[in-house]
Image 1 (cartoon, rainbow, N blue to C red):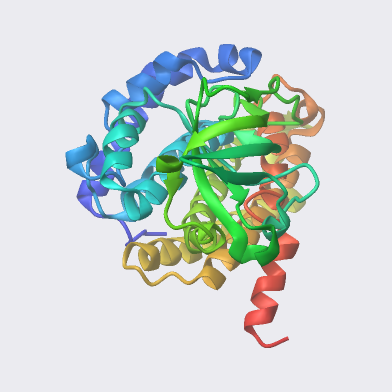
Image 2: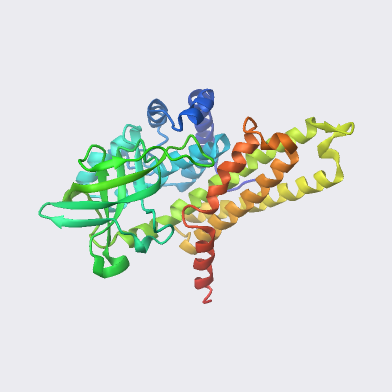
Length: 381
């Protein structure tokens, strides 16, 4: 199916992203899985190619693209390579910068945005807590004002880029009496006394994504590191979750579509009972269903991307895109594993890794159950 959301400029940018992946990442794919991290030099190479500054104004070292479709192109190409690449780079370049661009002071922008754009400062966002999950309003990490500092105590978990991060946008409770209205955002910097990181978490999938816990033990954070207004952190997160969720959706569809294409090639080559397994009626019909489903999902997500590029994507539409794309991805990859047979359960085969990598997409960025709850509420149910 033709895709009408992207122009020649977008496709030229796609070629640049592919070139970066082929030159810097593909040769080191197995090393990244083994070490559970994307090496610093790859982050720097991506920054040098301008891949991290799409949302950052030119005066702070970015591209100032102001067109979300470029972000979506990058997410697609990262996801075709590995889901973990889309996750790590997406958090750093797609999720974190808008908080500073939209809410940061001039001093904050000058201090942090150039390093984020160049890949020299790896950024994480720390919302989730061990006891909270998707319930962000119930977070327990505290920040008590003491003169010209906040004293931060608590912990976060499942933090993408957490192990390597130089910067972490941390959701904290500055007023315990005000519920969601008592939540603020602070920028914590690596090296602050009392700010420590746990070991890389041993995940089921996305091994090359460094994910860790963060711990805060009486961390003194200057009041100048407050992002936005005190007490407005929850609203700021809710306003920007739409971009995180549409980014997830773009990556979900691109990842599933790529693995499905590779599976179709496999079914043409793999023979059983003297003929390609793709020629058996059941498999042929199943593949026809899967191709149609991924193209339908892609068309819907493309519409959401265009809406977001035009400032018209609502949080509810982003929730729909997030849950539908992750559910569709899970269904497609499960069938891809089945089509590979026993080989589909072997870690040396890409389809097995993709199947494991995809499972978490139904959980993070707000679980699919939460997405459906939001949609239901919007319907007055």
